[in-house]
Length: 436
Ligand code: G6P
Ligand code: MN
Image (cartoon, rainbow, N blue to C red):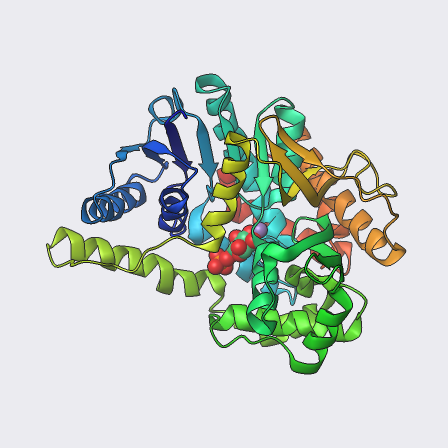
């Protein structure tokens, strides 16, 4: 089996060690060379220092390269794992805080924060895909960069033949909180889930050991006992408790937790600290830890284990790569053009559905049932809003951006949509294309 060369794009991210150790821990992922690519040299260097230390500690025989040059980053590569965040955590903070000022949900991928990020992210991500097409057109791009429905739609339009797989680990997170709370095993499950990214529902969970759909039983347990969130970070604990609340009002399916921003926006806004959002928590948590670790290493004070290891988030994307390399046909929830997977939804929507992954890439399943009007209606409005945003990007259209903002499910009217759009235009500056 060929030894792999892999590039992490956006390597300065705090998620990088988790992905790297998930690769190294996977016995079927044989990596010879790891390249760290980021446009932020300082953050890239920080991650290089951390990984170099860990590789030496653990005697890991993988060549480690740091580069800010796309040609060096991608030439001759087999896989690119992308987790770039255009504008960094500083701009995430703005995405979260600006809508909150107007009493609307301010969030990284949902609501208008997600749209602000979407317009930034398309610009940076398409540039990245352009480099990969130029220097490594045969490489697989495994993408975690958000907001994924928007990214995916924009890549489909500009690079229809790019070898890209868009994956989100959130369904894994939901399944883990269920298994950890109630003692199930995910390996025994065949899940049926449908939606858009961060906007979907479990329709059934077939347990092969029991030979039946256990979704009704899981819903009952969630309603009776709630989730066990004791080992979750505070903000994720809140998120999962809200998931349980959504099930209380709509008890026929398990929703993606991100729907809280559309179904419980007032709760979210009333409980948010407008001066200290998730971005601030990450600055004071993950990002501070990186700086402190680098300081320990460079001053010679680091010893042994420094608290980085493989993660579920990392394992998910590595499992996808392994399924390609070994033609395993494993099943994952992935973000793909609908093309009939959800029969009663427009075929040019970008949806998240179960897919098989093999040496050829992704083979989405067809659900073979029509989704209910409640979900369909919510999704259709969201798809239209996302399409308008992507149109706005390619056509430099202010009108389309305004319509996208107005149609976003977290926005009550065009008046407030316009105010927030105008403020985001100012704040994003050259991170956005010009809107005329
Ligand atoms: C989940 C989602 C990702 C999102 C992340 C945010 O993993 O699937 O799309 O980026 O959560 O986590 P954070 O810790 O950065 O708030
Ligand atoms: Mn996600």
